[in-house]
Image (cartoon, rainbow, N blue to C red; front, side, top):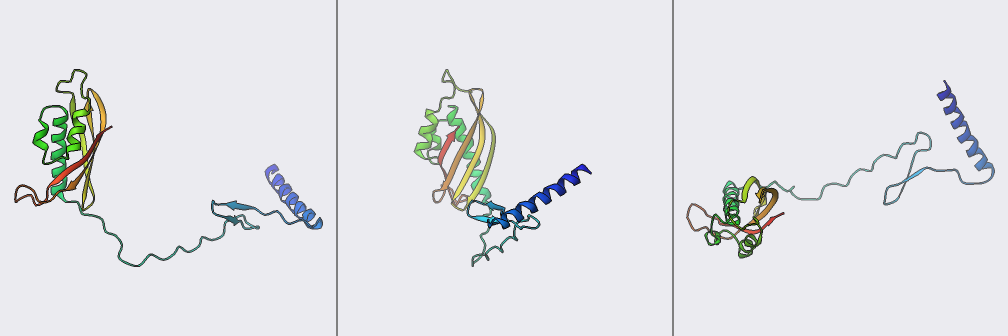
Length: 180
């Protein structure tokens, strides 16, 4: 009951304030909300915001379609990343992947420190996920263990023309790779 009584007192106080402002010739108090672009007036009776404006119509033309991933491209990227991890661990010579990775990728892998002693066995592929955001790219995200610590791996592939075999019409080349 005391809550209701206080609420009525607040309403009467607001009405009294409004009457006093009117008698003094002052503008009534308005409640507005600033949305970052302008002021929005709130309803004086109920406090609700005005109705939302109707959104503009969609632009003309066909909506974009999702790219259907090429299984051969994803498989090629998976195989190549496995080979690049072998190069990183010095289990495979970089020359074996010269057709599948850009020269800067192979230079980067030689520069990544894998073990304190510089020997083999410090790098393992833990997980891998491939996606094809559009027809001209394949992106790979994964994790590797380098010198006993998990690290993130990111790589991107681009098509580089016909493959060396007839059964592989497009050759995908690793254009960038990073071990984070």
